Amino acid sequence: MQFYVGWSHSDAIFTDYYPDCSILVSAVPDNKGSLGKFKTKPKNIILDCGSVYYVKQETRPSLKDIFQIQISFLESCDPCKAYMVHFDEPMLNKTSLSERYMAMEKTLFNAYEYMNLFNSKSLPGHVVPMGVIQGYDRVSIEFSARELSRMGYRSFGIGSLLFQNQSKQIEMINYAADIVGPSNLHVFGVTGVPQMRAMIDIGVKSFDSTRPTMAAAFFQVFYSRPFKTYFLSKSHAKLTSPRLSEPLPCNCPVCQVDAQNLFIPSPREYMKLRSIHNYYHLSIVINDFLTEKSGGETCAFSNVLRTGN
Image (cartoon, rainbow, N blue to C red; front, side):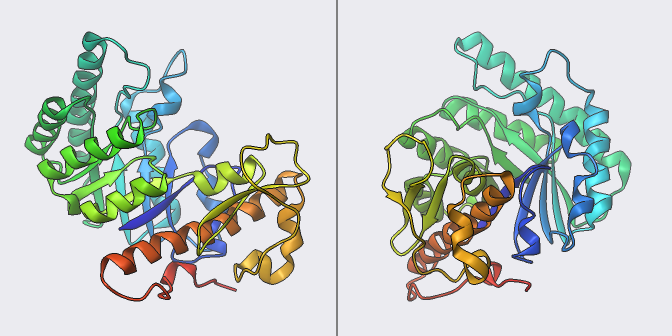
């Protein structure tokens, strides 16, 4: 299972520290031209449509405009593998059955239009369109997935899981995997440890998360083996997690230079260093789960954690 770290223009540039790090970036205005900052370009990238951002706006760009932003990302990094995601209509704020059904229909209409646009571009074979499965139960997920397959999609992502509880998230991932095959399925925005274990057991191809950056922004640091989250003792965050005032032993690229930098709450540059550290430990957790699943020893060390320094 491949982990894509969600990235935005103001975040740390993960590939400068981890050359094999996979990236998900959304086609939103602030991200235009941002991939040019990368000294080490991502080898694997998901070019998301930014639908969660756009549904909150009064107006949104056309499908063609979003596609052009994605193409500009593609041209600026020339990855080995890229997935381009059509515009979907998330169900995060849809409460009634009719609203959910309309969201699903809008998603499928956009998927059809997007596939036509994608095919007109004659992109190379390593660039693949990804269809977004939007549904709210087994029947709707199956309908959405089958319609996307009829349009020609062979890679799929399942969305609108963010506000579902843990068991519902796993249930919906299972539904989608049963229909399209787990090796063809990406899971958008699911980050819980039980969910990661479940996704590995199911055999999904990949998932994405902004968790390393979000935790860093809220003054949290991760450590692995065992996986734990700590608040910085200098922060004013609520005591919902243990606090830590000194670094623990760590081989991440930040700690190898000066681990005390993790414990400086602000400005943003220190938050970025925490996110680099957090990515390291979350990746270890994922790698350990994968190794455990394959029956190996949990001392295995993923290539993605080898720094470029």
